[in-house]
Image 1 (cartoon, one colour):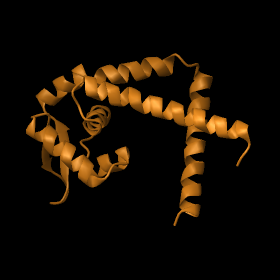
Image 2: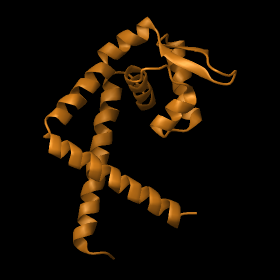
Image 3: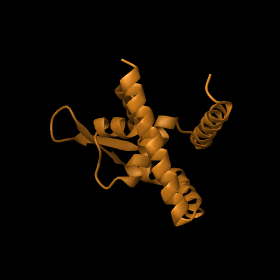
Image 4: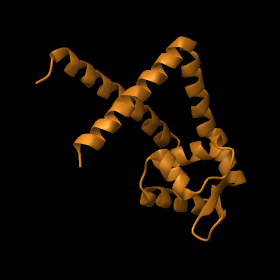
Length: 149
């Protein structure tokens, strides 16, 4: 077993990540959205061009089936519309006026809270936080790729 200190830090990190996930999961539930639906709305609200399903899957790191199910539900509820993309297989996803209203009541509020939280950190803290989190993620990605085949 590794040094107790590093094991405790890893445990603390995992607890923080789970707590962070729970914040978003709880928000989605309170807003009457699935987690995937929440993140799709988030992408649609923050992207400047209408994305296609494959781009959303890549952004969310979610399987195509999960995203497709959420999109179909959102389309049936009148929040999004799918229009032909550059080829027959891809469709652009955009918000309807009803979807925009939903975003104003949900995702826009979430984005404001995220911005408030980020702004509560100094510029140096923001940079350190993002740099270290990305470094840790890159290390994990590399180790998983090298050690799990």
